[in-house]
Image (tube, rainbow, N blue to C red; front, side, top):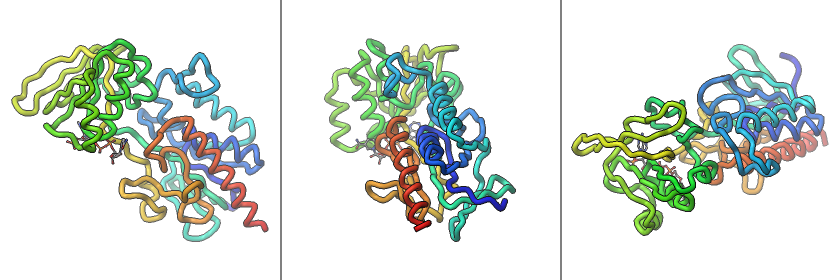
Amino acid sequence: MSDVANVIIVGSGPAGLTAAIYTARASLSPIVIEGEPSSTSDQPGGQLMLTTEVENFPGFPEGIMGPELMMNFRAQAERFGAQFITEKVTAIDVESRPYRVWVRDTEYQAHSLIVSTGARALMLGIDGEDRLLGHGVSTCATCDGFFFRGQEIAVVGGGDSAIEEATFLTKFADKVTLIHRRDEFRASKIMQQRAFDNPKIEILWNHTVTAINGDSRLEGVDVTNTVDGTVSTLPVTGLFVAIGHRPNTDLFAGILDMDETGYLVTAPGSTATNIDGVFACGDVQDHTYRQAITAAGSGCMAAIDAERWLEAQHD
Ligand code: NAP
């Protein structure tokens, strides 16, 4: 292709679509390569496509369904002229300018890139988990904890995330069972102590979740003792899977700087990566906050950074 776009945005969650709204309104005619429909978070719209109600996105006092929110983001970007390609990027080359992005055999070129490919929560990989995601199964306590007021729920994992989520969830739930596959936590000592001291948290050592029960809503989970193999059922209405996240950065290995866990590194107070004119926003560079609103905020930053960078090239 001979046309060179001002900016190509890779990924279409809250970060990418906010970057699209801002760059489109700045008359930069962005191209958004939004991903392909799939049953994972690695799809157009990102992780919010897998949630049900979102109650904490400002501006929606009655709440809004995750997929509807993302549809609104997309429509807003389209209104200002963002162009969408519903495919997955298969390769990028930022060795020379213009930068090149491939979707299989089709090449696109751009003066600048915004990377917003997000992250995915690791899942247990057992039957019913995907089906009941948003219907009792969750990967985000901050997002969904509120729905479990007065209920008995469980959290899986033994790292800082699991303990942080279990502790947070005791604000709402009557009882939180923390299910861990070993007999000691990986989490920091201070976090562990927080769990030990919390009377609402019960720790189930040496257990794994082996079945997820319920048709349209979670009704309980089966847990298996890893020492003696016995199986029991926990009648929980919520299951929070907190066994870690992975950023979607395979495409950028050896190209963009990453930290030791694969998150893209951006300059402090900016969305600039180590490559001039390539910006990163949203969960792909944030393992701390991981909220739609913070992703959207950083998408706005990336758009402004890209716009200013493009202007500076003309000067
Ligand atoms: P993590 O440290 O990798 O811990 C993942 C936990 O999930 C481990 O305990 C692991 O068990 C368990 N696990 C993994 N796969 C499993 C499976 N298939 N079935 C059952 N259990 C499974 O991940 P994280 O807790 O998300 O933390 C990621 C990073 O963020 C860490 O560096 C952490 O310190 C940091 N973080 C910090 C804070 C904080 O300081 N406030 C909060 C959250 C996260 P094993 O222990 O047996 O491997």
